[in-house]
Length: 100
Image 1 (cartoon, rainbow, N blue to C red):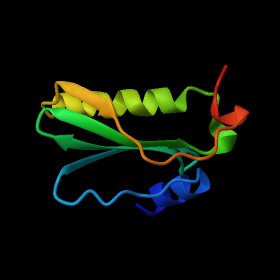
Image 2: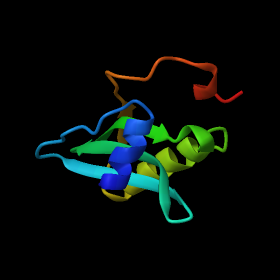
Image 3: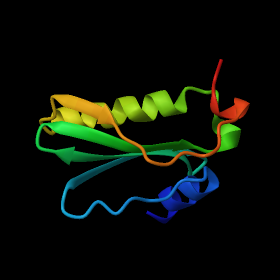
Image 4: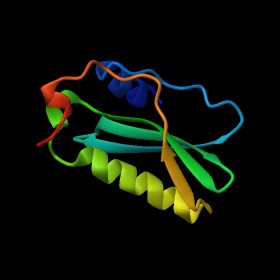
């Protein structure tokens, strides 16, 4: 969890306390270092994705897409039929956050 917290902090995000729901995390690693992560909560047959973060120096490589895809596959294997993306925080918008 420390590696995930470090990536989120570097991206201006915080780790959510999920309480009693099923939590799903998926990470991307490069040279034994966590460089991206996604977090979601399974509520019955629905996955709520709360956080997706990739360190700035690793953006533009489709890592967020792969991480979220893996999280969705794991949720589907766990019985989820629906997914939604929820967020109430985000770092300030900047050109390096969007891949063209």
